[in-house]
Image (tube, rainbow, N blue to C red):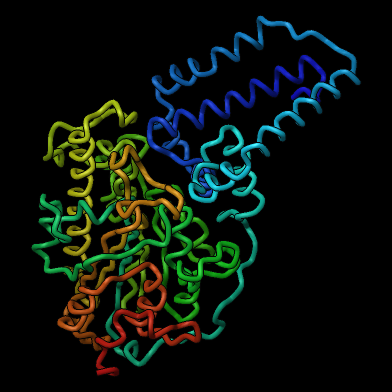
Length: 477
């Protein structure tokens, strides 16, 4: 700043740096947030409703308090002018002294940075600038409007589709549901009673591509996956959806979140109509039941055709867990109603979160019941969450932690499969075998090829080794 040698510029830049540092400090202190490129991508990709839940009156009060010293210096303390040469000399002397101090203990500093690589993401406001630069200019944006590389120009439908009966398969992308609080996974509370009653096939453990929607969503429907993660390649190639569409399947995307992150590029999207489901959309958000009740289902019911609908939930997106479900689902009490989670007890946070899981259970059960009642269609459903959530373990909240330090609560997610008897027969899938396969650890990396396999789509990008249904089809028995 001394190099600027101008009182106005020094004050403007010092105030700007302080504002950035104060914001980073607030979120790090309140939620254990690590500010890196992934977190800045989350911030840039979020919508106004999510931002409104975080920017509370308490946030502005604490934020202003953190900025008060610099505000005082900026508006009430004059800066003495000096000659340009003197200013440059003072700046260089300060730089030399700083470098000398660093070199005196370089071994200790270097060792600390190598052993604690996350430490560099705690240096504010450098973490904000570095993370933003990488997110915008190096890591790539999911919303870039550019043609994507076609990964398979000639996928085809298998013999199973020769049956004249229509097929409807729904893929529900869960939001922020963690395995640790999933009743079907052995959680102490039965947060999934309705799904348990519908005899679904629950997977014992699924590892997510990332710890945020911006990373996980493009990755989970990409052939690249997490094992060979390459964000630039994932965003340049088309996702699974256009491959299914090119094979002859009707594909739709329905969103109750902050967008598809480029996954649905090239396929039609269905909008949720608030007038169709007024009781579910009374506020700025719609409850997840509107994903079905708020759309025109006649658009997706294609007799004699195969249709796949991708539904992106609002789910358990934090910190306002208590706003993710209607009040009649508030079973576990008391609940946290404060977006500033450290103002609540852990019991209140977990109660609100579990109530939101209960609502997801209700929503999925409702979709399954609707599918069961469709005459003239063989139906199925796959549910999988995009990432998990921290609920105060090790003083960490929400999600988006760097992969290096991300706790299992943010990476282990629930997944389940439900197939009608007609669907199993049409596609030659064995229920007992699928249940056995579901006992093994799974990951988002298996979604791409497993969906191709389950839907009997022949493609050059299909990988049998990543298809959990491969050994359960009659052709492979």
